[in-house]
Length: 395
Image (cartoon, rainbow, N blue to C red; front, side):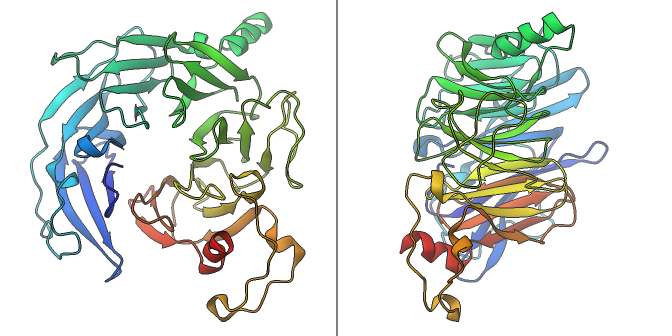
């Protein structure tokens, strides 16, 4: 995250019985090759890896590790290779078969046993603050001060799931149903004190991290659990969600109460009084597992799902830049596109580069048009935005 000069990616394995590994990979655009910069052993299953977005702390990682049903934590690691500015386009790196020992933990974040469920995610403050982090469990969210000067930090604040989804929890209690738990979360890049979280009952809410209380909520954003959330990098209050109802929805949290859709392909959010800015119904054949806005051009959105599909979407009508209606001649030798629907928001391309469920997608920090994806079988794929779509945005 903190290295804007190179296309580097951090991956880890989740093996239940075999040994686990942490890989730092670099993609060289000149040679079109991927090389291993460093490979480290990991003693436990790795459920999540988050690299620090601060340029002054680019070598830091938060690794969510589970040792078993009753033992889980987030480890703060320091990998010098992530901040090493040498050999930008070199051929150096880790030799095949060479593995370094597990890096020493700077800190270990162990949540209180009173918070239910295994730790699923660790989040850095995207505003460049390397001193604070959030860990996510089904039973709630913990905020941590990483610069507290102690080797065994305690969470500085807690937001239980019942508080994060206060409205939904109250309704479930009255109906005699099960209260929602936290499925996923995303830190607002525009407001350092705001966090969005998605629940198992399809609820979407925002948390004020200063009070650890619910700030806003959509009780039925999806018909089923929300699996992933991604904030728009250019438009405050706008975010994308994907859930088990197979839909991807874009929301403006300021207009979520009954506001009409702003794009012709938008649909009313099923089962909710709120309306999405844009809905992509049946975006995947099975549940989407991940989605991510392009870091620079919010017209583009990536998604991956348990249907083995990796998809690139256009959401220009609800982006920070309006779409162009001028024809594009000569892009990759193609004639001008005269189809009026070619400018419509929706699917740009479905990439068949995976044979198993796609659980992670990420945009490069160094190249706005390059993205990576990781599937269940351990395959990591790198792709580019199609040239026609790139020039549609730039011209």
